[in-house]
Amino acid sequence: MTLEEIKDKVFNSKEYEFLWTDPHLGKDKILFLCLGGSYSYGTNIETSDVDIRGVALNSEKDILGVTHFEQRQDAATDTTVYSLNKFINLVCDCNPNIIEMLFCKPEHYIYVSPLGQILLDNRKLFLTNRAFYTFGGYAHAQLNRLENALTRDEHALTEKEINEHICRSVNNCLQNCIEKLSFSEDAFKIYVDENTPYENVSEVGNETYGLYCDVNLKHFPLSYFRIIMAETSNVIADYKGTVGQRNKKKDDLHLNKHAMHLIRLYFMCNEILRDGDLHTFSDKEHDLLMDIRNGKYRTETGAFSEAFYDLLHKLETEAEELKATTKLPRKPNLDEIYEKILKPIYNSILFKENK
Image (cartoon, rainbow, N blue to C red; front, top):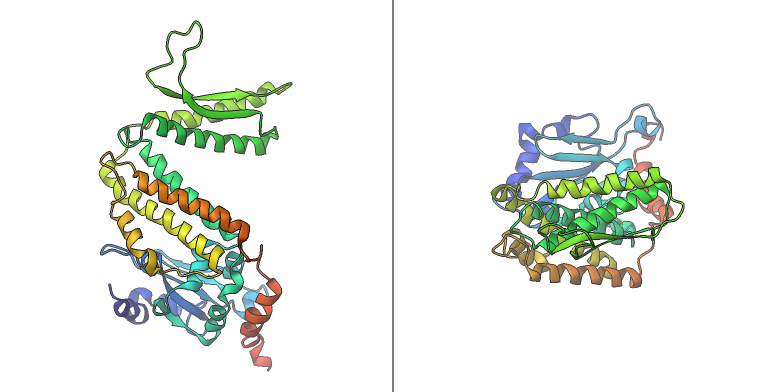
């Protein structure tokens, strides 16, 4: 679908009529509407859905607590319009899905009001070094989705790679136990090593590699130990019980998409930290991202290639280095956001009947 066709649908079709008739929306309240998802990244294909994202003013009654409005979602059109108050809270946290709305290509803004332009003109006020944690966190979530699926395909990863992924998941489980039970981080060390039969044990199974642990505990409550063993054992059992159960044909398209977004998130994270700027649509990385989406970084077994993991490692390393050198602040300047964005926007509409 072309941009002109999308804009025509948004303004003139029945399915998007709610944007202009909903009492919380309409041209008197919507600050801007933009493309989201693959269209905004430039990674859309013929079957891609059109996502519309936007921000709308809170009404005077919302501000005074008489009514309440946070967002309007429409599942049929995959549209989400956030209230300005909620948007500001999310964008100040450098939420990747939110902050990218401020950095779309100019032609990807379907509608921008004069007050919405104030928000867009001051968009760099929301860029902070939190991007390392928020974009990096989203990227790790995408990586987990990849590896979770690949561990179910007995031909995609080597035995060692599967166990290394399970090991990461077990260690994540241990971190949760540490938070709940308050014990030392060095109490348990979980790692992958070559299987070696113990004395009086004739075999350790058919695997060459296995999970091992070193334990450093004294006067440790047995009830805590039982909880830790139960939770980590459940993680291992979940993986071992699903090997060979992956629906390859169904999953491959989704895996390629997850892989593409994983790399995209690091490109965006590093651009923020390095340049103090962001481009939701990146011409420079477009072809590479589409190659990943089209499966060019997969091996014959279905695993992701060494080149893919080399690229990922390079971007992760770059992110770590940029985190240490970036000139961006740790958090946004709320006083400046108030003076340059919120004050002029709300001064133009708040209590206007009394002016």
